Length: 439
Image (cartoon, rainbow, N blue to C red; front, side):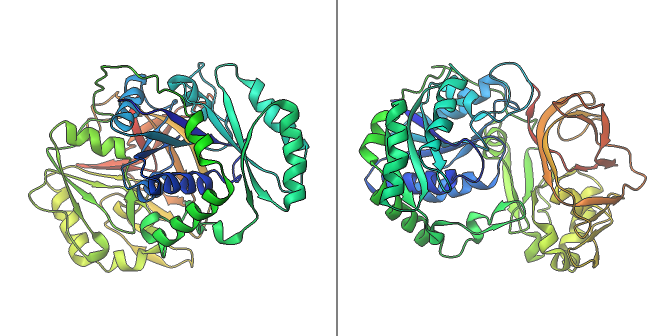
């Protein structure tokens, strides 16, 4: 049986999508439903919270970066054997990049592709009936989608709720819940988003508190009822999203290195690769039996001193790189470089396998989709291979060093190709998070 689904979306970021998504997921699991979470867009952090809330794996659905076959495979994998899919949107419902219809990265693309109704979350602080005008605009902006109802967030009082409800009644949109302003419902954040699920204190108590609040304020039966049938290809088999770097992949995994897309790992495993985790923060070297090493993104800038002092990790990594490929994404790229300057301006020596020097003291946000064309054969494909991905970091490059570029990169807004990342011998890296081979 293929589970029905819906998307929790909002007119803008900061409306409470994640809070309400997690509360709904947890509340319905406590009712005995098998719920699967999915995340629209390239965010790494939210799927881990979905997994904690539901007790089942989550994954990303990205209409810009993923081929259609991969989107269907991920959705079908989530829908098979579940009772309900609750997907979380990203940014505003229609926010995306220039591209063909259905390929913009907007949450609306995912809703249209799979036939999932939208449950619209609106932060009504500072407004009343006017919130209905926003909802009405969302209802009519894109004829491909259907908005099934609205959940009001940050309601100040019963009177406030009634006034907003009057506006929604005027446009014929059901109000399926109204949550009060409550500071305890806010999850802790830092510079790249929420504090990661594995680092959030009392995570399951927090999730239960969210579920309690949502169950008290939302019509759960009505929400289950509005979920729509999942329209997905019955027999779909996509190739791994990215080429498999090796048959046995050493993958760094701890509080400093955690940004790995679930669909990428799943694709590598499906191709027969073994993934062997190791912890640089525990001063562990890449396992010698592996034939490739992957340093994901994460938060090395928060642990730069420990990493600089992890002699067994650094020496083992240098030895590994003499004979086998090593690739670093974002934070992993920073650790492969010559040095990392932390937020206090202290420079820490890193692996020195690449010449790049990075700084978190000189911060500048870099954010957006990218298309990367590889400049040489490597663990992610041969020279000329095009990959789609995403970049989100605050660190800056102090010096690129003398290494050749890893890729030539463009964005969806028509930017000229620019060299990105570094390669030296068997070592490659960049701030680019690869999502898939370019569609």
